[in-house]
Image (cartoon, rainbow, N blue to C red; front, side):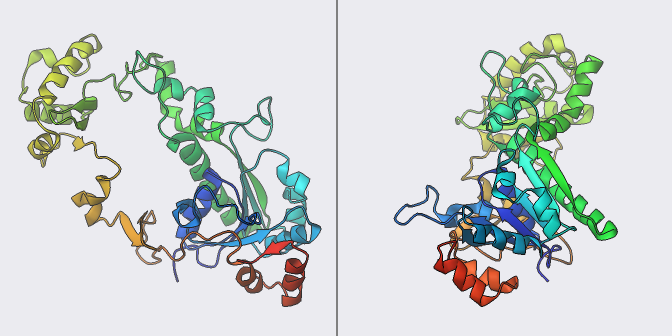
Length: 383
């Protein structure tokens, strides 16, 4: 057995972004994820070569022309044997293809039909284009991020696409699959990134209503406003991050900084925070990043180096945990989370579109003559 989802079958409609990330996460956990890709145009190179598309690892690819009825019929035959389907298109796209929840549930009443959008399936913005930054903007999350005197800064696309989208889809899909095994009935899981991000913002909505959170950026306890929860430049042009929220950790941080016992440094005196930030900045600028890390080691000061994307893999903690793995000649993030008995693993590199077409259709019980017929009429490509 490889991974706790060994034997769990998923059809993923090929797309970009958070839906493929969810499929890769489930593939890492052992699911048989079959991605339905478009047939590549001859001589047209993809923007991202397949082996670098980490969101497609641990999947197999079937390339079909979904404009042809034979291809739609083939997808429904795969759906009939699947535990779940993942799609991340705009509302009504799957319905227009003839692959909406109704025909898919007719083919497989136990199917979990997991669909993801940014704005949701309904509402005045449902058909509008958008990306992570746009969904963050609408939820109020983006306004909280960045420096007070600059425009809000997007946190890569980690929060809406991956946090509020892909991870909520994964939880929803697996929850519905557990229920389907009990009831024998599938259902549709409707994932909207604005829903997920709003849910992630629960604590800050509560703080705001309680009165302990302001609408000003870099003015609050975990948005960079607190001098004990922010990043500082060091003498070598690098950075350290401090997160000493609890009083005992704050006391330990002051000891590391050589400020232990000073009455002027009352932790939660917000009026003093600007002055404290300036003072902390001057102190941290007096040593290199690694000198501060060495001083703080073992002292529970909640201080860590701000590593670059190239530095992170070689940090001793990352190496001790095998957070990265060498696979297919590249450095991949290792599967997460980890299991004591049903180990997740990297089994397949990201496939080129259609490279598994015949193998998958055969494995999923499609007769050879039907596979040949699909290819003969151009409804399927086999790399």
